[in-house]
Amino acid sequence: MPLHSRFERLAKPAVYVIHENDEWVEPLRVAFRQRDIPFAEWFVDGGTIELADIPPHGVFYNRMSASSHTRAHRYAVELTAPLLGWLHAHGRRVVNGRRALQLEVSKFEQYLALQAVGVPTPRTFAANGRAEVLAAARALDSTPFIVKPNRGGKGLGVRLFHSLEELEDAPDADAVASLDGIELVQEYVRPARDSISRMEFIGGRFYYQVDVDTTGGFELCPADHCDIGDRFCPAGETPPQGDAAPASVAAKPKFVLSSDAPDAGLVARLERFFRENDAEIAAAEYVENKQGERFVYDINMNTNYNRQAELDAGGGRLGMERVAEFLGAELARSQAA
Image 1 (tube, rainbow, N blue to C red):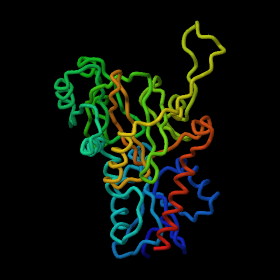
Image 2: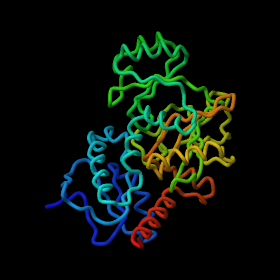
Image 3: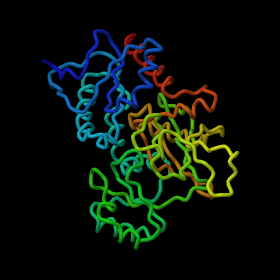
Image 4: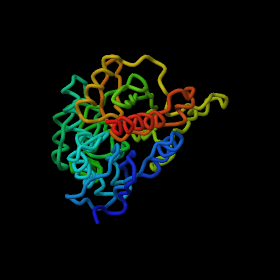
């Protein structure tokens, strides 16, 4: 028996979605069905790959997430790595391949690759162990500063410290939280506004930018279904604060599609970055300081879209629909080849 039954094979070429979160894939399922694009899902929370087996024909879209361990799928990433290697070895068309997976689970590797194409990133130290984290914070010599997991996801575990003493007084669990044991000690780039920007790329090309309100914290998952609570996701509304706030003031949405022209230079460098790192459907998050400098601090190789923000912008740009169209076109191209 070649493969575990959970890795479904269709009789004809199809789009195969490799993932571990049903809720995040639901909008893509709908888009596939609306366009009559044949697809199957490989839910990777376990399974078997036979070295001598041959994979089915089709296009394989890797949506494995760095946060899979937060959904009790501890080794989903580790199994996806040889799965992608097996597909590559047989010449299958893979969207977001092995290098994309490697960067998905290492922010420090992201920064190295971003700097290689001229994209500014915040000053960062990688440290293993509480003593090393404290030493890195001393060496950074800048407050406030951020400590965050090298391998995390959804913004979980990102902590802002206003002084070295605050970090020294933090419990051990708050000082080291990364799945791989590597914490990043990073300068805090104070945003010009209380927001960050997230650039979405589909087919390796810029699609749109969404501005994200950060007043609620660092957990900025944009998915319509997100299991970190209503404070951060799905996009909620933040009412005016204080007794003086008038009841008639409209609540502020957390996610808003930007109407501003994108930074053409940054877009070009990020398109090169994704092209050189085997990623075609991904997002880059950046913060702009008061001097107008923009620093990319996170790359999401497994990206989601906020439908309400898309509809609020008129519904002309729908992320999952565009993803389905791109994958359908790649499937047709692979069949022709």
